[in-house]
Length: 303
Length: 266
Image (cartoon, rainbow over the protein chains, first blue to last red):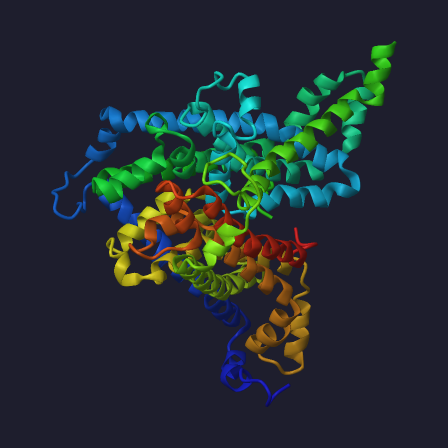
């Protein structure tokens, strides 16, 4: 193999190093570029947002106030705090709804689908590869008055006959659920696949009813999946922009839209940075609690 | 007695089956509507007036759509190349070696996919001093790569977890340097994962809206941005649906290739 390889001549020096030094060179050379890239295009930018949020740097053309000023403003200015609270409430409702709607589906695919299991999990993933903007625009057509499911929405009591369903809280929350429910199903599925069905049979044969088995055996055993799925739905939902933009109106404004307004329209970079950091902080706290509660071994369900 | 029998023979199971089937129907109806309504002979949002191909004909004469498709493709290809180039080697180091900083490095690489995309986009926007115009497509590419790298690492790591690293030792004992062993043995043997990581990064970038929305310089549009701006301006729904179908024709087959290439990797 020597002679034909472009690497042989130039990399021979490595062999002159000790085993330990070789390992260190290999780790540095392989990890260095990725970590360097993330440092420059992820961690340093994030640090810059922190600086803006505390007023160390200011929006061009404005003077910033040093300190917690901009975080306080998020709370004291009701225009902001209303959007933030609304986003959290919408995200929470969407998370609970995704759990209730997604849990039986994950259960069916993992434990009852037999040889169709792989096909069904692929079917959960396909919508995920349809761009978010397309899915949300699709919902706008589905929800529209005269749209295909409008009669069903009326029948289910989501909307009074003749009233528009778009631009309501329910439309936005349903939009969040539709877009993010695959994120709930995947970790639940990953969690349940390794699950010993005989435990359920044992529980039932020992006299626990179906419901009792569900609450005493199944749900506690799938807690890791429940928490992971809830995080994966809740975190992106809180920062949503497209769903309220396409399905909601001024009364459904959410954090993503507020961020866009702060950065591109009224140019309040300091307040916008404080909101960004607030969202990141909420995420990191939730993820930290997750790992604390459940340990690192739980499947996160990305792959 | 009867209730007991029904319970045992599984009305519950039948109910679960019916529920799951209806869940999938609801999941796919909106996507089917986009495809069907792209052939709709009406400019209204949700009224069917008859079959037509005129929106596809209109696409042919709309250069901004083809420019957006070209932008999307260039950005996605560059994101894929960058993510694979960085992620594959990071995964290799993380799987092959045990070292003290490993758990920390592992966590650092995955932070970008945990955090929501908009705060991330905002941070790159501020980092570039809001001068996205000077950066052109590059701003979008680095934004996409900042989260796509982690996905490339995930794909490669899953594959290398099943790889027998003693093959590298064998190569070295036959005279290869460690670098040669990596490039001529390990990477070629794991090429399906390289391919899959590239596909995943390409798809994530091609479909991305948020990062692009915050980082695209004025006047530069990718397909998702074009769909958004047309929808926001009250554009003709069937035409927007036809553009969406063009996107689906690219991303759905690629996602099947991805699923095939990663089969067996957990």
